[in-house]
Length: 198
Image 1 (cartoon, rainbow, N blue to C red):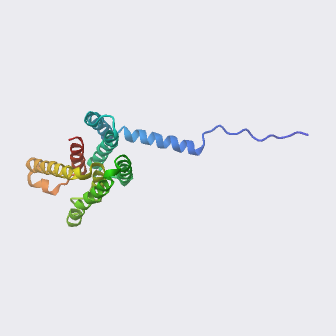
Image 2 (image 1 turned 135 degrees about the horizontal axis):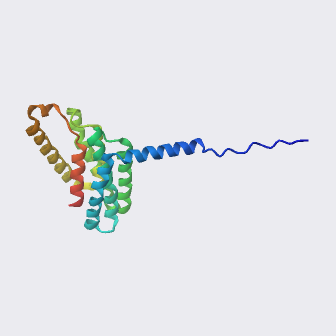
Image 3 (image 1 turned 30 degrees about the vertical axis):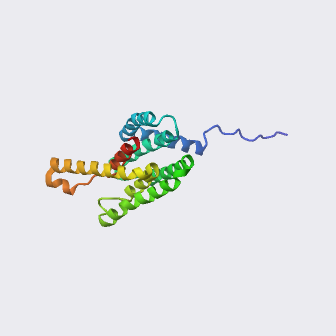
């Protein structure tokens, strides 16, 4: 009596594998965009400066994570006028955990600085929502966690840089510049990196 065997298993890639490959291609396409390449190009020498500043220690480890994160957030904010929660919030959590584990004697400073830095931008957000966004507030949370009390210097430097850029826009475009806006995130990131490496 003839017997029928099961059909051979298909060798076609599974649906999950196809999805993973599609996501990998999508990620590669995104990372190849000029803004991400610019962020990477800016981060690389800054990480080198951080190594010269801190040496191969715990402070450098934190800086080597914070610097490219800030460069990426600045690039996204500059081009899209937003600071993605999926980057800034996990980054803040990672930095807080790392700082607390590496420098437990300053744990209270990291948490208080993160909260206070975010609160500094809450009032401008309430008074003039068009000028400051919630993304900027969350970015300050990250900066406070990364810098501790030095976040005050970062805020001053970033604010001065933003003011200088606003003056430049006024000189270049005159009264029309008052109707334009620009992202605050890149200037806050700039101030933070200066404060970090100082």
